[in-house]
Amino acid sequence: MKRRRQPESGKLDRQAQQAAATELAIAALTFIAEEPARLGHFLALSGIGPELLRTAAREPDFLLGVLDHLVGDEALLLAFAEQSAIDPLDVTRARDVLAGDTP
Image (cartoon, rainbow, N blue to C red; front, side, top):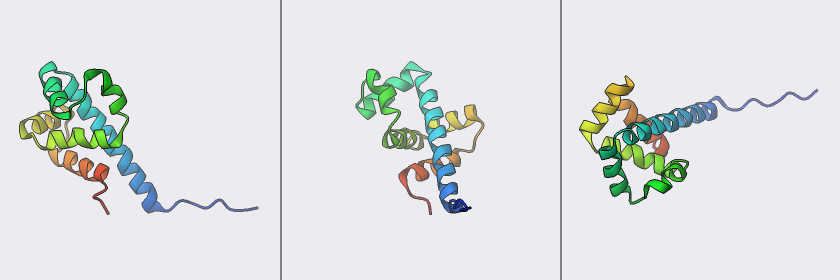
């Protein structure tokens, strides 16, 4: 009987990091969308219309842009971190994961 080859633990770690970063980015997008002024500002900067938001949210590069937006606005970042009960550095780390900037 053949033994099934186990995936490398590093690959699983990267997959878990990617999944966690994606989840955090979706939470950040939800946070932004909860307030019309925040959403309007984000949409104006991103150049997409509200009708394309759901489609765009499925794209990793868009989610990276969501986290870039948060990291670039300290007040928004701190508000999101407080509401989510996370360290603001977690957003930066998730951004780095989505950008492929992690070992």
